[in-house]
Picture 1 (tube, rainbow, N blue to C red):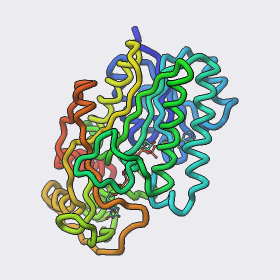
Picture 2 (picture 1 turned 180 degrees about the vertical axis):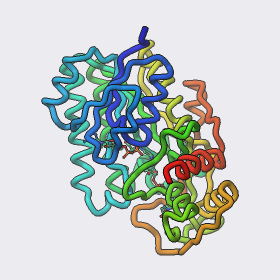
Picture 3 (picture 1 turned 90 degrees about the vertical axis):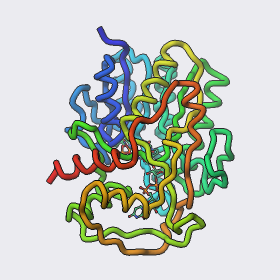
Length: 325
Ligand SMILES: NC(=O)c1ccc[n+]([C@@H]2O[C@H](COP(=O)([O-])OP(=O)(O)OC[C@H]3O[C@@H](n4cnc5c(N)ncnc54)[C@H](O)[C@@H]3O)[C@@H](O)[C@H]2O)c1
Ligand SMILES: O=c1ccn([C@@H]2O[C@H](COP(=O)(O)OP(=O)(O)O[C@H]3O[C@H](CO)[C@H](O)[C@H](O)[C@H]3O)[C@@H](O)[C@H]2O)c(=O)[nH]1
């Protein structure tokens, strides 16, 4: 018997497809809604895939009438910081306006539990060495603002309607399914670890390091990497808290440890045994220098701790990268 009926919006993407597998293995029945703009139909195996746009009320109406969803998990978004600086309209349309359509449809169908992918980008250029959930949220790029606005909508819905949400602010998701079937497949790829691995495997001639003049120990940006499977486990725990009737909340998801881009390059060399040719360029617009999570709150509330190290994230992503060639 299924533990619950879950709609995963954006379930054909990188994190969403891992979530679908995790839910399936945990005993849930899953339906995916995805417009395949950046996702892949073949990444969805243990769920029904409905190809459609989350802003399309007709598609949403049909979908919600055909299933009694217990909750919705929302991973669909445009999510590149750099692109959001040059195409803010597309980001506000896709990430804010269309999310409003999804929420409206949920409310009209009486579905009141929501798990939302937010981001560390809501913190902007944080000053703290470990950023807690109550830190100032002043995004420095439109992508971060889109997530910040939806967070506010969800807070207002919780206040005014019987609508509960778990908001997860991820730092840098990395790694791949340890079994090797799923992984990160963005095209074009913009994320650090897959780009480094493509340079290591020879699919790419070199890697360009954006900025060595940050106020960090080695001058390159510092980020907090979190394995995609650890992320999925936290989401399931958050979902189960909502299904038990608990109130929603907002949680950081990271490891609590920062690695500079140069340290990640070292990890890639160590794990793969391959050389990576590195070029240095100017800073990428919209990139904060330092983002590391304080994860005490999620540990306390959901009993969640990350399991995987940076080298394990690189190793699993490398297994996926080499399996594709
Ligand atoms: N990857 C990270 O490091 C990271 C960090 C913080 C937050 N996030 C957030 O996590 C979520 C998932 O990120 P990801 O890396 O898996 O991205 P992704 O691009 O791989 O996945 C997004 C999925 O949503 C789908 N989608 C986009 N717009 C849609 C629409 N209008 N209708 C239907 N489907 C749509 C895409 O086709 C894709 O399958 C995003 O909300 C992102 O902002 C990601
Ligand atoms: O070719 C590259 C690509 C990235 N980087 C650097 O590597 C770091 C990580 O960059 P990513 O693009 O992999 O990730 P971001 O930190 O920009 O963004 C990620 O974390 C954000 C939160 O801050 C958002 O949530 C976003 O969705 C998610 O992709 C940054 O310092 C970036 O400047 C390079 O030096 N060269």
